[in-house]
Structures are given as structure tokens and as C-alpha cells.
Image 1 (cartoon, rainbow, N blue to C red):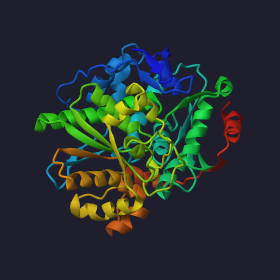
Image 2 (cartoon, rainbow, N blue to C red):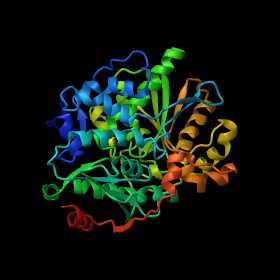
Image 3 (cartoon, rainbow, N blue to C red):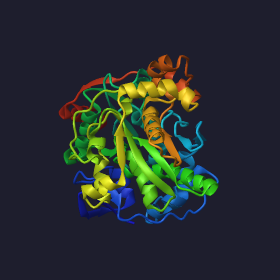
Image 4 (spheres, one colour):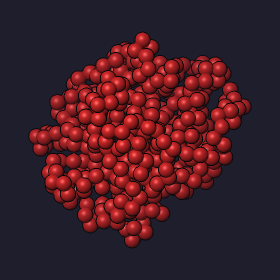
Amino acid sequence: MKFLSTRSATLTTSLDNALAAGLAPDGGLYVPEHFPKAALETPSATLDQTAHALLAPYFDDSALRDQLGDICAHAFSFPAPLRRLHDENDWLLELFHGPTAAFKDYAARFLAEALSRLRTVDAPPTTIIVATSGDTGAAVAAAFHRRPGFNVAILYPDGRVSPRQAHGLGCWGDNVRAFRVDGSFDDCQRLAKQALSDETLRREIALSSANSISLGRLLPQTAYYAQTALQFHANHGAPLNYIVPTGNLGNACAAFVAKRMGLPIGEIRLATNANDVLPRFFAGADYAPQASLATLANAMDVGAPSNFERLRYWHGGGDATLRAAFVAESVDDDGIRDTIREAPRRHGIVPCPHTATGLRLLERLREAGDTRPWAVVATAHPAKFESIVEPLVGHTVEPPPALAASLARPASAESLPAVYETLRALLRADWA
């Protein structure tokens, strides 16, 4: 299978080249030339087996084809359980059981393993540059930490991630450097894209991306949607609908791809925080990126979601067609607080602020009389946001063991202005 840029149907490449590059040369995002029908009608025994079966068609022409099973076994070595909440048709898809307690762990580990296996012995080191609004950077750092042949540069907005998230970004050392950017996530994302599009720099340094713009992040995230949708359909004979908390639209795009591959997925709804670019667009306004606002659900503080370009491409560039495919709603900080406060009683769980946006949409659906089965995607463990969550629920939320281990390590980060020339000079000085 070939992969092409969202900005040029004639700019095609192999999967291996797309994984290594991250971003297309014209600044577009790589997409598969078509969606293969999933060779799955019943759930596999394990998540990694589902991932292997689902991803195999994309790897037909890849040097990794015969290694895909091992890559999936490494990436999907922890569960993604579908948990029933208090009401019969309310479900939670728990994606926070990995080493950094966030859904990004699955795809980051997949990408790291794939890129490691694509490396040749004499290849120069590759620098992975990643912009993060909170969780991506830690997952990428954990996946690439001490991997021979790789360096990692993490860019995160100073003061706009939780204290435990910041610690998880700066606690690695060795081949991982964390930069506290004086700006927003959108500034971090802009800096990363500028570096990846800088052909002069790329002649000096091998660069790649681990953001959700990378196919190596997008494609593996389809696996947990496929697994849970198949399990639910086998047990209940109906498609499962999903509410996806979203910022940069990567996880939502993965749900869409799984649906287009023929999995029994019903409606996909998007939950955002007060950064309401997507809700305004899907309600009929022009798509108008804006400066991001700082919210309690900080990992979703995105004012210019990169993967919107993929969604628009997949719907023929027609906004009316795209608007017909999704519903997006925003939840402000007051709504997030109220949902977290009431969630133990109403749903039987303690959610993180991002998961709370999805639960709020679920509550609105139930109040409007919707009785269909819905799964809210739980994107991170609440212990990563203890300063927000614990005062609202009135008790301590213990971190899972892997998160506790990272919090026990010392952490540090370097200050960086939101100026590309400064970042470029740092990359050239240390890794060229």
C-alpha cells in the first residue's frame, strides 16, 4: 500500500518512509491510499492479536511485515478494558494502564519499536521532536528512553501542564531532553512542524515526529477501538458508540479509521474543553483556529488541531460532508469540576479532567433521552491531576506503580523561548 500527503495526491511514499519522516515534504499529513476492510469479525483473544490483524494490510509492503506481530506484542502488553458504569448502557474504555498512565502509551511504544527495527546499523542518530500538551511527551520519552540511535526533544508549554505531568516530562535524562517553552501548546506544535519542514536542518540531523501527525501514532490507536467494538457486538449484538475527549484529534481520527475499516462502531462524538474550535465548526461556523486557552483539561488545550486536516481530506474537502459525520461539544472548567465531583456517585469512578469532558457529554445525552450504548474514552489516570481531582472528590487518589516510580525520580527541564531559531540552534549544537 502507498501513502500520500493530504496536500498532494501525487506525493506518495511507502509506509516505512512515512513512519521515518513523520510529516510529508509539503507539510501535509500522510494518509493511506485507501482503507482496507478489517479481516476481523469476532474479537481476538488479546489486544495485540487484534492490533496485528487490523494493521497487517498497511504493512504488506513494509520491511516490518514479518515483525509486526512482535511489535504489537511489545506495544499492547497492557490491557484496554471496557468497564460498565452504574447505568446499563454507560461504559468506560480505560486507556490509562500503560507506563505513563495515559492512552498515548500504546502508540508511542509501537512507533518506538517500529522505528528501532527500521534502523540500519550505520544510520546516524534520529532526533524525535515532539510537542506535548501534557501526556504525549512522557509516553514518547518512556518509549524511546535509552534506545540506541535515538534522541528525544520534548517541547511543552511552561506552566500549562499539571505538576505531575511536568515531572513525567523531565524525569528521564540520558537521550531525552525536556524544554519548557514560553508559550502555548500551539507554539510548541508550530516549532516542531517548523523543524520537521526545515530541509536544511534535516540534511544535518535525522528528524522524525512522534506527535499524532505521525502514522506510527495514528494507525496503532485503531486497535483498542476494534477490540472493544468487536467484544461489545459479540456480547450485545449492537454497535458501540464512542465519546472521545480530544485536543489534536489524533485519537478521534483513529476511531474514525477503525469505523471506515468496517468495525461495528456507531456514532463518534467529540468532547473538547473550553477550546471550542471544533464545536463551533461542527455547529456550522467556518473552521477558525484560535489561540488556545488554559483549562483544567490541559492536554486538550489546542487551538489549531493538526489532525483536522486528515478529517477534512477523508471527507473530500467538503465541510458539509464532514459536519454530517460528527458532533462536537465543549465543556468549560465549571462543568469539568461538577462532573468530577459527582462522578463517584453518578458513575462509580474518579475521572481525570479530560475524561470528565466525555462523561459530561454522556450525561447530556442521557438527559436528552438517548438510550443507546455509549463508551466514554478514559484518556489518563486521575492521579496525574491530583491537585485538581482530590479536593473535588475529598480523598487521595493513589498513582499506579509505574507513575509512582517516575515521580520518585529527579526531574528537570530547560527553558526555551517560542522562537524557532533558538530551537534550531540548540538542535544543531547538541545533535548535528
